[in-house]
Image (cartoon, rainbow over all chains, first blue to last red; front, top):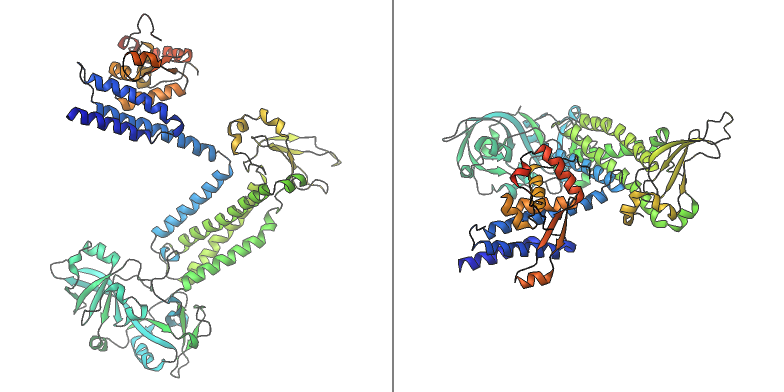
Length: 493
Length: 105
């Protein structure tokens, strides 16, 4: 009974392994393994028994290696050195690596993630005019208190927070020195984060740890919630943990202390911090233009404040990149020829698909270069966690322009060096003709498509009658001479 | 394939086993003591490189012996040249698995 079960299991393993073998070889492969398995099963009764199940597991390895080998060959046929697919794959890999690094660094991650705050376009950070670009805690608590009554026509709601160094003491836990945002009780309401944090039921002062601080200092202990914590000599309820990525306001803080009304009254009026406000769109003509929205102090003094949209970093970065992109496109004719070559009219007219593929490939290269430069420049400019938006955007523009310009130049040159039919890089450059003192005899370089589609003639000295490079298509009767085409001819255009 | 091509010891053992007259997978396994997961993939590579060739046994012979047909392998001339070169690298190979007087295939 046991032996029959083992035999059945072995046969099942061989059949399952057969599914990994390419269909064309499967029947023969299975027949061989079934035949061999029969031998093994017979040997189990003999003097030198072999474990049939162990034997059949070898079929798995054999099938995997055959299947993997076939797939590798298929991939090698597609990603031939110098092919269009190879080029696109390389550019996609560079873009993917940039996105991965951008996401991995805390400073640049917000560039790719949407704002966690609902209606973030109408959320602004108010600071003194001098502090624009690099938000610093510049608003006194006294000013905030005054504004809460006087600015009803400008803002729906206002909240205050001041980053402070503080020591956290939790019962039976070592003390931790953290940066705590001492905030008005309505901070999470203004940001629309109250539900996410789950702090509705707590009373008195409440403390929220950021996800990073919770992991680092308290090793993701779920039992902390609801306990009492001593912060700056004040008792607060540890109300929960702020989800990762929810804190996007200036200054890296480890915790938020939401003061209740009574405790808030006892804070010094000179305490300097940030004011976050939800604006009334009608009061601000261009609320999206966060960096330039100005509000005059409404209580007589000639003080000016900047209302900086919380989405200003992302919008500013996109604008900077857009400027660089346009600048690079307009500058391109200065350093590169815009012609992609002179191709026979008959070839263009009868093979519209080829033309579309050629220009589609060129467009794909341009788009991918723009994406690569965008993600890598964002990573470099914002990846170190700089809060100086102005400096970061300037750095991004400086970093992005040159790679964009030379990237586009490379795309044009690469396009000219490719076969217009199969889009593979041309090879075997040869000097043709003799140098002519009168310029009447043509001389230059001839390159050839390794798959026999044609020859490319590039003039050494461009003249009025032979300026752009010319493509000379070869008749299909030449195919036999090109071994490469004979092997992979089915993939040619 | 040039004779100076280097074979791994395992591949050389399998090639020698086939040369010695062990001409189907299970027989090679039993002779060399190598597991199935090593012997069959190695035989595929040897066949791909042209050092061995395979041939199915006639169905009538298998029917007569009341068993599934076997796939037999034999060493090609290129494989023999490669094996001869491998003897220099692995001097004990020939003594470990001596070839029979008369090859079965």
